[in-house]
Length: 184
Image (tube, one colour):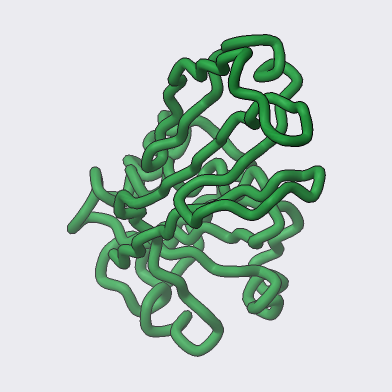
């Protein structure tokens, strides 16, 4: 499995605010102007809330209270599924000696991004018994058309070079696991 380190993300002030350091970004919040509030703080891929204290005496030169900060830091390692394409389809999927799960997806598809962590988890659980790949349907429309992909995400299971089953939509982990168990 491939791994990628995600860089910290700075969110700029939507009202055209002053740029800040790459580790944080200012976002004006009506709640923050009232006194103190909880502002989400993202650490890795988790979100936690930290109290934000705004003192009434700390008013900037324009007469406004300091803005709240929202920080998203994705510094943990995110595991990604290996990709398959038209060029590697025959060797990686049809020529595999174990069952293969292919996630047909597209970058603009929200449900596709929701199901990917589930597929990654199942790839770890079934390591050695199942290979998991993802295929971008925008970049490989020939394969998507060949297998009748009309809706994404679609997870398709192959064994001995043949399509065995397809699961359409962002389904629960248990649904995918039940389908996988039939072929391993």
